[in-house]
Amino acid sequence: MSQLPRKAGDQSGDVVAYERAASSTTLLVSDGIGHGIKAHIAAQMCVSRILELLRQGYSLRKAFNRLVTTMNEARGTDLPYAVFTVARILNDGVTTVLSYEMPPPVFVTSRYAQVLPQRTVTMEEELIGEANCHLAPGDGILIVSDGITQAGLGMGLHSGWTIEGTSQFVNDCVTGRIPARQISGCVLDKARQLWKKGLGDDCTAVLALCRPGRTVNILTGPPADPRTDAETVRRFMMMDGAKAVVGGTTAKIVAKCLGTQLLMETNPQSTLAPPRSHIDGIDLVTEGAVTLNQVYNILDEDSGRFDEESGVTQLHEMLTSADRVNVLIGSALNPATSDISFRQKGILTRHAILPLIAEKLRSAGKLVIVERI
Image 1 (cartoon, rainbow, N blue to C red):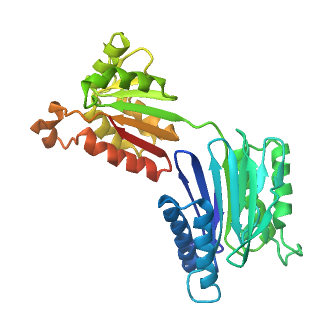
Image 2: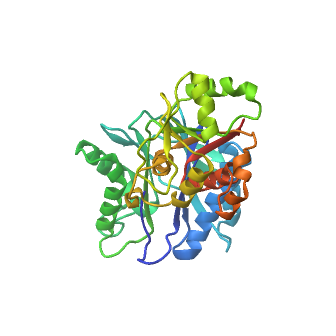
């Protein structure tokens, strides 16, 4: 994403948000009327409302419809007013883009870019643009605010840059072998040039790229019923993605069910983090509560600051690089973590620390699914 407010130092009136679910990713771009903090609040309220409706189980179209109704009522009044685009990208690449008073999206591939054809539908007496496509790995959807498409308006361009001009520029970027992740920045830089002396509006360009997701699976804590150990381990091993076993007792169960050895790290580098273990077929095996607490403490840190490698830093890398984190947490009680020494050291149990880790990961835009076993 690339974004600039109309005036340097002001709050942008454009707001971008996205949210991952088990079956899809939703991207929202909202443009509040006017500029500055008032426009930002209007756009933020719009984005928050749509996301909340979707979390409550509303369909994409129904949530979109509710917001259009609200904006129609706010138009021409002192109530917060914003226009917006919502893109829903399913895991198989099927994509729907709904636009209310916003420029059409641009479809971007590794070979070309073009404006996505929209069909016009009537919703709450308003004309809504709807576009559909299928994204393969490497393809993307570019969404821009009208600060981009109106760039140069009255400064040599009679109709501004337009979405067609933007699309042609992106097409030139693609054929010029400019990396896809740099395209939104290039679009913003070009719009800034076209505005010449100063931006005429808030400018936002967002390119959502489709790629294979990175999944991390964590098994931590014994199942409530020991009779399900073998089935739990079998299921865990069949899950796609990297695998981490977090917890000494859990590691023993996994090794036993797999019929393999559990080997302790012989020369650990870290004097702070618990030593790692090794089980064939598992990417990381480490201790439980202490490791999880330490990971939580450094989850927001840049990995470049780490002086040593350990199970904590390895789990940090796995979590921060993942798009989806599946956690199987055992419900069996662990007498070790109920020891008073854990309380004295400020070490939370896995059942207390994992929700905090999940909250941080979700705030970073990751999909986290926690299942108690």
